Image (tube, rainbow, N blue to C red; front, side):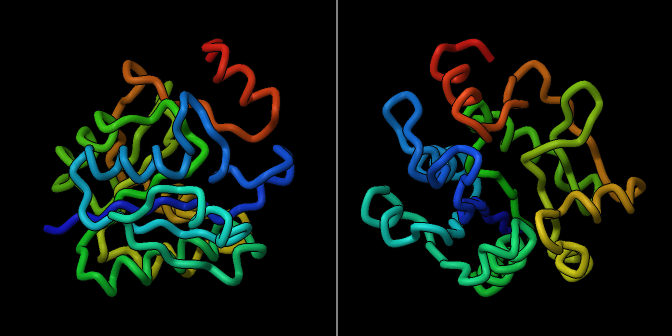
Length: 196
């Protein structure tokens, strides 16, 4: 079973004031960090979906070992980026994909390994915090068409996961951290100051 990594990094980061892919935390761009986390966690290949400021991200980032795809419909929301990314993953022969959002700086390779260790249990294996399903999520190819059909607007895989709890294995990741995402300048400040 070939498990690809899929970074969703196409948004404009309107509330933050800049594309999240270009945000630097701890001396590393968030997009570079996300791609590295997936690779170190055991995903191959790693696909990165860009959109807003894609040319700037490509120029600034170190994505030489990743497959970069540009979602021209990025402004339609995360759903279009997930559909674009899963299509690229399928073209590269993967049978599953670990989906990671670019704005989760506390997700590390251990999260990814924990999902991979449980991949045989269900079509979807999802990190959970406090019992609530969050990201990252491992999605088997068998459910990609259904996931894509429900991935509309700013909804990614969440709609499918909520509709099919019997096909989802939750993996507790509270001990690893990672529940924060960076949506605003205040979020970024808290991450930089180590307050989250």
